Length: 115
Image: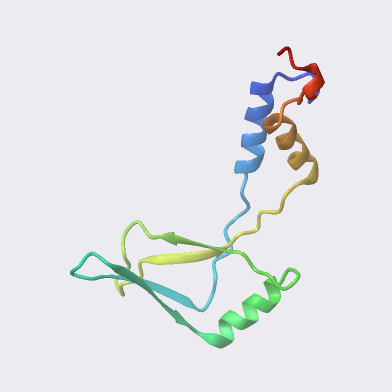
């Protein structure tokens, strides 16, 4: 990637970052949003404990599981307004280094400044 222009590097990085594996939906969570007359909202999570705990144990990564919650386009017939899936993205060290190079161009020392 050394020979590529920054704009070409950016395009490659964006494509790489946007690649996602197939979504792994979370079992045992039902999410319903309620809107009140005053404009306030709340999310109600109904959790089937055994199902969720078993899935979390399978997904455990050093004590953590990252989940993404998304609003459904239309509520289901039973009022479900959101769904959740596992965030499987992991930073790629070489990709992280490339992003850092683009985000932080070569810095000059104070002695090199023209003023």
